[in-house]
Amino acid sequence: MKTHLVVLISGNGSNLQSIIDAIENGSINATLAGVISNNPDAFGLVRAQKHGIPICVLPHRDYANREQYDAALLAKTQAFHPDLIILAGFMRILTPVFVSPLQGKIINIHPSLLPKYPGLHTHAQVLHNQDQEHGVTIHFVTPELDAGPIICQTRLKVDAKDTEETLKQRIHQLEHMAYPQVVQWFAKKSLRLENNHVFLNGLPLEKQGINLPCTNLS
Ligand code: GRF
Image 1 (spheres, rainbow, N blue to C red):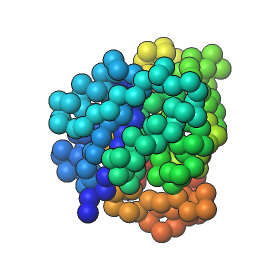
Image 2 (image 1 turned 60 degrees about the vertical axis):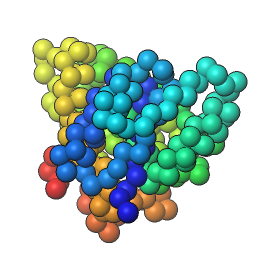
Image 3 (image 1 turned 135 degrees about the vertical axis):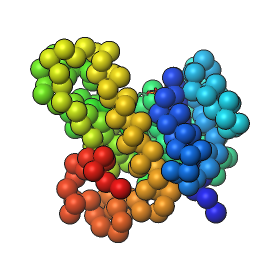
C-alpha cells in the first residue's frame, strides 16, 4: 500500500505544489489523499483541485475554541486515513487534541533555523539582528509550538542586499527542495519518530549530527 499523505494549508500552497510535483514526477512514492485548509480562500486549494486531489475546507471561525476546532480537524484528517500529515503553511497553533493521537505522524516546515525565531516574522528578525545565516527547519510536531524533534535544517548566507522579500523567495527555494526530500524519506520508511527521537535509515539523528543539510543527503 502506498503511503497516504494529507497536507494542511492556509495560504498560497507553494510547498504543497512542490510535493504534488514530486509525486507526479516519481520522486515521492505516495498518494496525496487530501488537502485541508482552515481558509476557504487559500490558493493552495485551487492547486489541489487542478490535480484532482480531494479538498476539505474547515474554517476555524465556525468553532468556539481551539480544542473544538482541533477535534473537528482530527476527524476530517483521519477520514483520509493518513500515514503522514504535512503542515505546509498551516497558520494555526495545534493543541494536544489534534497532536497527541497523531504523534510521530505530523511534520512541519518552519522558515528559520530553530530554535531561533519560532513563530512569525522570521525574515524580519534575521535582518534586524544582522544574522549572517538563515534557513529552514523541518521537524516532527509536538504540542509545543515549533519545538518538536528536528529532522533537518538547510541554510543560506544572508546577503547585505537581502530584504524580507528576497529572503522569503530564497527560503522558499530551499523549502521546495527540502520538504519533498523529507516526505520521500518517510514514504520509503527511512524516517520515523520513536520515543521523541528521530531515526533516519535506522540510526538516531543525534549520531549523524542534528543539523543535517538536506542538500547533502540522498
Ligand atoms: C512557508 O515559508 C513555511 O515555512 C511556513 O509557511 C510558508 C508557507 O508557504 N510555515 P506556502 O503556502 O507553502 O507557499
